[in-house]
Amino acid sequence: MKSLSILGATGSIGQSTLDLVRRQPDAFSVEVLTAQANVDGLAQAAKDVRAKHAVIGDESHYAALKAALAGTGIEVSAGRAAVIDAAACGADWTMASIVGCAGLEPVMAAIKRGGTIALANKEALVSAGDVLMAAVRDHGATLLPVDSEHNAIFQCFERQNAAQVRRVILTASGGPFRQLSADLLGKVTPEQAVKHPNWSMGAKISVDSASLMNKGLELIEAYHLFPVTVDQLDVIVHAQSVIHSMVEYQDGSVLAQLGSPDMRTPISYCLAWPERMSAPVERLDLAKIAQLSFEEPDLVRFPCLRLAKDALAQGRGAPAILNAANEIAVAAFLDKRIGFMDIPSVVESVLAGYDAPVPATIADILALDSEARRRAAQQVEAVAA
Ligand code: NAD
Ligand code: MG
Image (cartoon, rainbow, N blue to C red; front, side, top):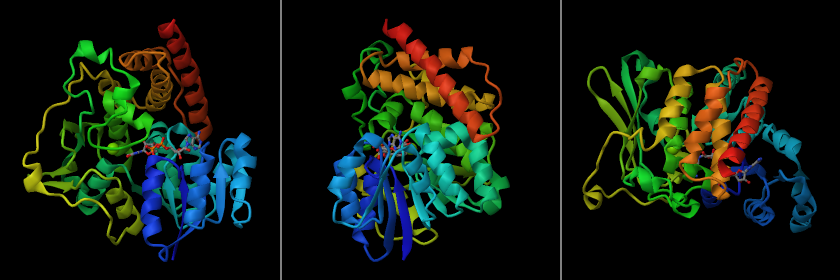
């Protein structure tokens, strides 16, 4: 039996993971489930999979969670520190699926226990890639990529032939606004932005997919996960989301991983790794799909991808600043305080005006993150005024 924990159990990735776990009750024992505010979702999930411990991040929900789990024997705790402690419970396998840089400290706590971490929380890696990957090495942890593109690359990347890799090509669906004119992009609503054509996901990543910031964050993520240079990373728009990414070798071979767009495939790959398990996903019917299309990404209509590429090339604190400013801008867009095209403007102005010191520790990154958030919030005020 494998012991596991899910950080962010009530989210889209958390729920997909729970779905797989529920189907094989004898294979897994659940140590901890965490959530930020959804008491009912957390309590239900904890009862379903007989978790030993349920943790709610927002302390004000402690009594409600305690009441919801009364008589079950499931331990209950609350607060930010409890989430981080829970991440360090020493489970064999941890799903890191908290959204945003808020997941960074919990991920680090899990890494320090040296188990296997299935990483969905890309913002943690974008903000703290060097520090996080050094901790993985120092503590003998195993980091498995959940993001569909990185999971595909992980499946196609021959580590023993890394010197023979010419390019890593991330596919992008292009999001719901792939064909929208620049004029109309300024007028889109949060409701339209979160309606992704191929994937069902949390609100923040859905907006990132619509702006192509998601693909930019993923370039930075790939840079840290695989032994490649910035110049070896490429993006191609592939609207059907059937090819999840590719690795091109010097001999001309291009290896790709294909599948229906369902996160339960990469999650089950991480759950069973280095073996495989069955997953309840729709089988790929290529004759029905009939055609796969490809096009270059448009960096003019989608400046977020350009900003992320620049931040990756610049290195130092730039990716953490990019991520923090984007989190603030996306939240303001979802709140209808700024427009869709204000997202790249806010991010660009924070990046341009902040010459941050090079972060060397998690504390440095958190300080930089919070200063970038403060500046982004100011920009949002200016735009919204
Ligand atoms: P979501 O919004 O559906 O869920 C987020 C989870 O994090 C929830 O359980 C929530 O309670 C918890 N959470 C939110 N804020 C928190 C905080 N401050 N402290 C502690 N917990 C907090 O998001 P999601 O779509 O499941 O995405 C989760 C992560 O996985 C993101 O980093 C996203 O980029 C990545 N990811 C998601 C998908 C997908 O298909 N949904 C695909 C690839 C990568
Ligand atoms: Mg992805």
